[in-house]
Image 1 (spheres, rainbow, N blue to C red):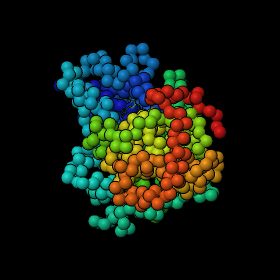
Image 2 (image 1 turned 180 degrees about the vertical axis):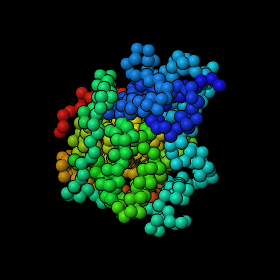
Image 3 (image 1 turned 90 degrees about the vertical axis):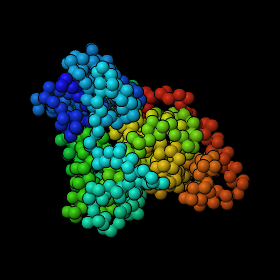
Image 4 (image 1 turned 45 degrees about the vertical axis):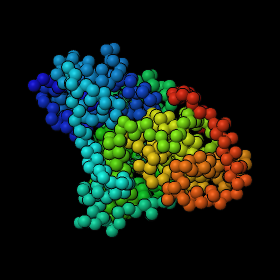
Length: 524
Ligand code: FAD
Ligand code: DLZ
Ligand code: SF4
């Protein structure tokens, strides 16, 4: 047997990988920092720092276990700065006969690895076992089904794992407690302080490196607080279960003008890069319910995000790629609005969501879906432009989870595979769920005029523009009924107002402009 090189990518930082448990004793483990992975979209500096710092700590952990590790640092003079060539360079350095790797998180790399399966130095791709299900499980579940609704996949996963199950029945008698989870942001919030993670010498070195090499990317590096070791991630998990989970459900859909995190867990990045396993996270939440420390609506809602949505979008991604990425049912062609990189807009909800994204490499789900996502949907932003943005700006972004959420859930670009109707909303929704509007120069109650909330006319414009695709959807019929009942004068005036707004909206002619951190204006 020839000695294998085992490549561990920056989002596979756990010993729970088949490539490691099956590794022969002479295997060489490689971790490679490469500029190519940091730049194919201009990743937020905090995301790059998170990946590099976690990679370095993981390499140190493996070395402590006497495992032979080759670590390519970003500024190594021989570094080829691209993941696949770098692994091949290291393999020849150690005279390895093959390269073993875990299924990566992106089709782009998976395809490149498949193409090398029969090369002189062959690549062998093993399944990623960090999930509750495999792409094959999803494919088996989807076979012959007319509808691929997440809810049914989720119920199947509940039965299969036994999570929140009491015999054959769901805990409490219902599968889904979402109806209890729609409270808006309260007037006064008493949020516990999040844990602070001390930066050791390794993390400090990475922060400097990232500042030097990626400092021009959109996003603030100061205030970096992501867990970079399993130990730190476990501290965050404990904090969430003890302090935040009890209120997670009721405020899950709320949006706050000044609180970026509310009762959300912020565990996605740790889950996605391997510091936490989805099973331990779900089991900790389940235990809190059975110990009486958190109510069922919160625990079920939280487990559904991980056992349901997270597994479901991954199955969708791997069974629908590569054609999935080209879907554009609503023929949306607009470039990304410039202000997604600068925050420079009078629309308070959007300027706050973008500011929080810039400062924290984080926005919670409803900000992604109903603020930046909804605005892009209403304006007809091209799926490719929006997907690249989401992939770049969040610390947790990996294409297998980002793409179905953006393309399917936000933009309805997959023709309703993922959601039975688009999540389109006017300013009324934002006003109900947030405290932004009271601080905005626009009025969410007005549809026409200089101070009318732009989302209102854009909402009707979106519906009119896409009538041929959406009007027959039974869930959209009441909304189209409202449009039909409107006087033609009002419809014309709304159309003019929206078109005027869209004509003046500055957008990127081509992806990649304006990504400089310096373009960001001081706090408004
Ligand atoms: P919480 O609200 O605490 O939720 C708990 C966990 O559930 C999350 O950590 C996450 O692992 C999982 N989860 C929640 N919602 C989803 C979902 N819709 N799909 C998959 N998993 C979910 N999530 C990513 O992990 N990476 C991404 O690149 C990503 N891109 C997104 C892009 C868009 C346009 C949208 C609308 C959503 C995206 N999400 C993505 C899903 C979700 O917004 C984030 O998982 C969540 O905001 C992360 O914050 P949290 O850990 O505080 O989540
Ligand atoms: C996101 C990222 C970045 C910024 N840098 C690296 C890197 O230098 N080396 C590496 O192995 N992985 C990196 N990653 C994560 C990869 O982009 C990720 O593994 C693929 O996109 C598949 O999800
Ligand atoms: Fe957003 Fe409209 Fe409210 Fe302003 S008025 S914060 S633009 S929803």
